[in-house]
Structure formats: C-alpha cells, structure tokens
Length: 292
Image (cartoon, rainbow, N blue to C red; front, top):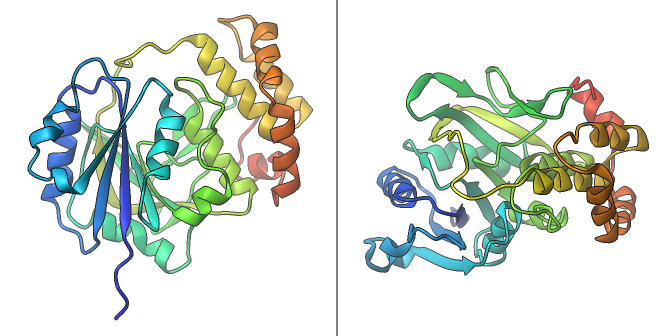
C-alpha cells in the first residue's frame, strides 16, 4: 500500500486571543489516518496569542512563522511557502473539528473528482446555521449555499476551511499577492481556480464549527477592501464588470483607489491571467447563475 500523503494545515493568526490554542487543542484531539504538520503564521499580533506554543504539548508538530501585518492573503501564502505537504489545508484560527474531517475532505482530491474542497461550516454558538460553500450576490457580497446531497460544485471556497492540492495552488499563483489587509481573498482565489480550469467542491458529509465575529480583532479600512475589490476586477473581469465594481465603492474615493491599483501593475497581471485562463468571467457568472 502506498504511503499516505503528507498534509500541511495553515492557520493565519492576528490578535486571536485564546482561539489559536483552543483550535489546536481541537485539531489534535480528533482522529485522522493522515500525517500532518501545522503552520501558524502570526501576522503581527499584539496580544501574545501564540506565546503558548513555546510550551505546547504538540509544539514539535507546529511550525510558527512571524510576519509583520502582511494581511490575510499573504499570510496564507507565506504559510504555503513554508509548507512541506502535498496537500494544503487553509483554516481560520477559530475552529472546532470532528473525527475524520481530514480523511473525508481529502478523498475527492485523491480520486480526481476535485481540485479544492470545503466542508460544511457551522456557527459556534448557533446550532441552526450551517453553510455549504458560497456564491455571490449581485453586489458581490457572499451568500452561503444550501445543502445538496453528495459532493457538489461551489462558486466560492470559504477561506475559513478548505483543502487544495499544492500543485494547483502554485499553478494559479496562490492567494492574490497584491491584496491589502483583508477582503475578497477567498473570492478571488475561487474565481481564479475556476477560470484556470480547476474545480471547487463542497463535501457536505464533513462539518467544522467556525467562530463568526461581529468585528475584526484588528483594523480593516474601507480603502483596503475596495482596493482588493478593484484589483480583483481588473485581474479577471471585462470592462462592464469593472465599471460595476467601481459603482460598488461608496465609502471611499474611487479614482484614487483605482489609480493606485493601476499603478501597482494590475494590467500586466491581467494580461498574464487572460492568456493562461481556460474560461472568461461571463462563463463563471453564467455557470453559477450570478447576476453581476
């Protein structure tokens, strides 16, 4: 029998308080047949949320990397760069896990049914909520899918938890390296995966529990979120959709943000992506019946 593939589970963390510890306690308490390492990217936390790792009982299985506020997308990229696994699992640092979650998530990748898979995601403290992957509303906000039986396609992989083949992640260039603090990183990666010819699915037989917060434990500005939105639009969308994205910007100066996006070389990236992709944005929005 062939050796089990090795996995890297990557957690970006910033001002997570006790969450990193409770998340790892849950991870190491559940059953799996797969060998894995944990990579924590402490992205400029100010609350000592990762200090416990110095004496943690599983510290030999945890790799701690420090970065200085590089943002959600690049913290994940940094984790991937330092990963040894053939498969990467990206997780938020405020989750609870169940037995065999890893085994069930990786199965569609091993059988060639999918390239990236997300579990059902429940809400800590609200047993009535379970989301099954995401799609997009006409204002590009995310909307959770309802359950379907068996493995099914999803327009958007929630960044809170998904597994992806390392070679696929690297082929599409990972998370958007030009993004600021937070915003649209999951959506951009998902769109990129689909446009480049890869497949994203939900495995509804696996459920993880996620802490949904009303506010970030660090500062996120409108300018950064809108910058990411326009960078995503210029990277992947046609002129009509870029204009629609400009109209979504209501709390900031559109022209200033757009000028910065263009100055940061997005048109060169756009050209490279358009040459590489197998489908265009019309195909994506039609496939998932998104009115945008």
